[in-house]
Length: 141
Image (tube, rainbow, N blue to C red; front, side):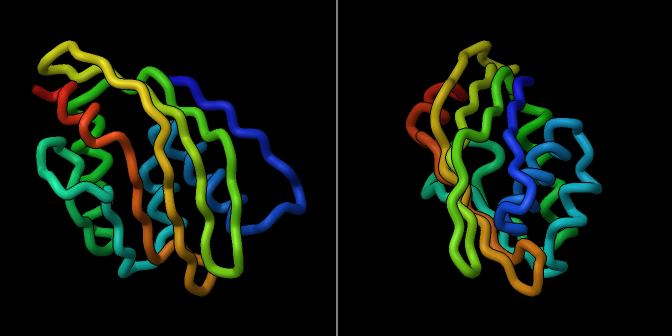
């Protein structure tokens, strides 16, 4: 898995948090990911279908590990590269390029995603990930 995150000391602490979360994910350290989340986090991939295993809503820190399990048990991630970050008082938006191979079909997908992170009291309280859902569904079919 490729991961290249440029850090900028003194930047927005919310962006620093998202960068730490991505680095933890890259190491496979889900406990470190969960440490950045509010207990009642609202986490979901923004998709109308259920054609991909990680699509759906995950409520609270107890359910979020299932999101990562659904990804890890179904695909091999071949690239995960955060490209840009922007923020305001409560939110961070990140653009990520990722690519993967589906274990069951051998098909690949590569796309840009947008991640929306909303913070409350210094913790991530809300996450929505948007991706090319049609391309993902095709890789699973």
